[in-house]
Image 1 (cartoon, rainbow, N blue to C red):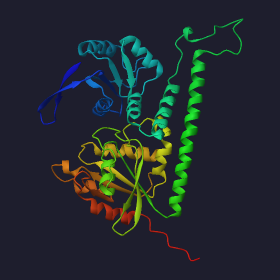
Image 2 (spheres, one colour):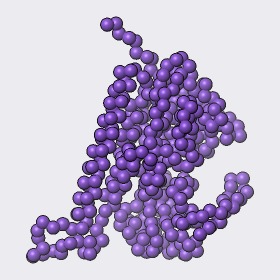
Image 3 (cartoon, helix red, strand yellow):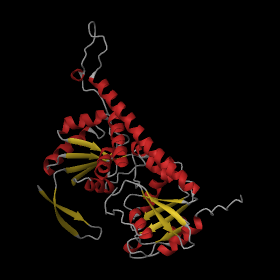
Image 4 (spheres, rainbow, N blue to C red):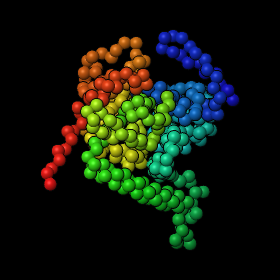
Length: 380
């Protein structure tokens, strides 16, 4: 099926694009007190996962409905929208409970997923290395475990009462045991990879090579910056979470010092805790870094909100107090320079274009100045 989508631009012009699509999605968001509904990022996530957004629906509520997340009146409105747009997928910009998902699918007759499931799907598509695949499977298993519920007596091998007691178990209990067992296996394999990485870090410490980690919101240009600074060829795409696996390269500074530069997985608003936990081994590179290079998409009008989202994840990783350079990237896309007071607010900071390779000399000088002084040799 081919769908024509009309995109409204900020300048008032419209563009038409013909896109082949198998999954046509309607996005749902609710505006809670002190939490407005921003669906533009969810639309980007949906596009990255291969879905075409054909409609949106929002609702203001003091709190989510315990049964359907949205109100019963909105359910009827959503049914009409599904029929009109021929949608076959509903995506919520919030995490749903297992009961809410089940209730919605029964009422609507089509597949319903939430923000966490959407992000997990993207991670599964983009994981390339064994470690990345293991971490994604762990996150998926933990999500399944938290959403596993029974569906009535038909799910059980046993009834109640006399003659039914024994070593048997319900289907739900069996499923839980199987998932727990797989989670344990995955954690063991990931821990082994983590131990191997720890050995490499220990070797690096002995060689006295400092580590700088590139962090930032997804699609801010972290991999492009790594390529520009180290003449590498790490995959770069204009998509959310284009790269998941950490990449480390040597960077030679103007002073002659060598630093290991690591590109890490991108962060996002409301990054699911299961992903932070599953990618703990990878994110250790952030925790162990001597310096954080925080790449910000300076061309995004909401970049300060993205900065806050990155800070929240760094808080969770207990790395927010580390020395940090804020790098405002993509300045080649700006009509005028960023205001001085904004750049000054995040000092030490620098404006660059990793794509156009401008401002990199100044960035290298700041990295050189912000790294801890090399240890002095002790006499033997």
